[in-house]
Image (tube, rainbow, N blue to C red; front, side, top):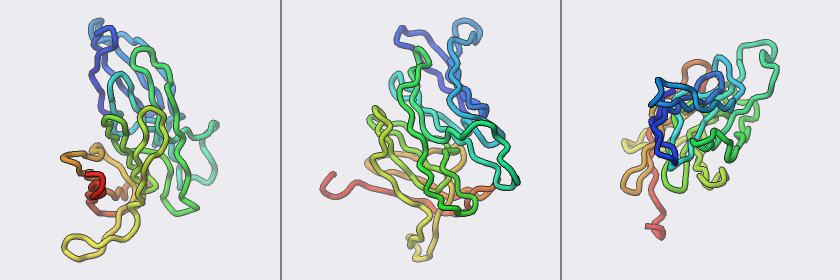
Length: 209
């Protein structure tokens, strides 16, 4: 996952880093990367923990956890349960502020997983996360409550009139917000994820503009 440079409430410059092991770290940039704190947020594994990117808003670090199962394994290779979902961590202390386990809506669909592999995006009041189940969700940044979601696996008519649908979210580019519009690319068919290929653009309802 990409790292994040931030400053604590006391003004100390730190580096925030996440691993596929499920660990999140704060490192002291004034002391050759000395660890300040560590928090084991996810279970971790080959396709577990933090994948493509966390997000920062103020002094809160938002951590997406994949923790997907191995769809080709005959038995569960993990001795502890998945912690797939979204988590908020205080960058000063590493303390967990809230946790929101991912809701499993896959219902046995092949290559569908509830966790978050793709990079996420934080904005004032909300965190945007594309899940491996194809849902794009907005979370309340103060509580972790899901305030909006959209199933990108549904068929849509594109601007050229053709039909398309999304799939799992993955990769290092999270949702983009600009000028009242939300842009999100859905479909990630590698490494046992759901394929798809669609760019979706969302706007505010007319009465909210």
